[in-house]
Image (cartoon, rainbow, N blue to C red; front, side, top):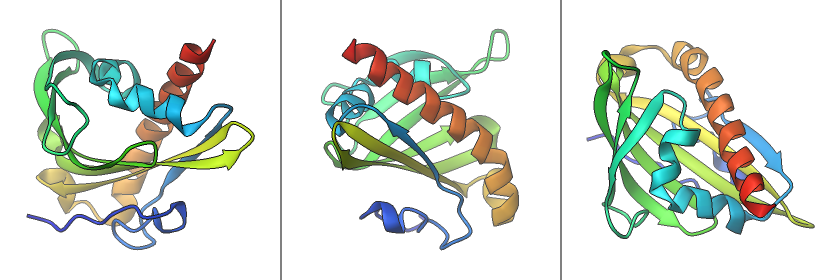
Length: 166
């Protein structure tokens, strides 16, 4: 099992594979609590994670470590059932997930929330394939494959957080 790398601060968020992982950041005009509420609601997972089409079941007490979110990816008739597990959590600061990504394998995902003051938050995401065929890709190819997906996921996540504020 690959070692997990904690996201301690936004300055070391790129720490999955050292400095080769491209982290994606986005500033949002709301506090970390609003973004965390979306992350803590496992039923929103299908709305902000690109590629997920629906949530089938969320363990009670999500997002505590060890809890799982069972979701589907893709579109019918090619839909695949997958699962994401919470590996670590610091409420309103950091969420670490282990996500199965179809036939690509498994990826570790770190989402960090950094308060910027005056009701703003920097939301940062870093992801790395850690098992399966995706993990065989060199770092740069992983970055190129994951960056667009993660950029759109962050846009959706922050849009939902802002929408809930209004």
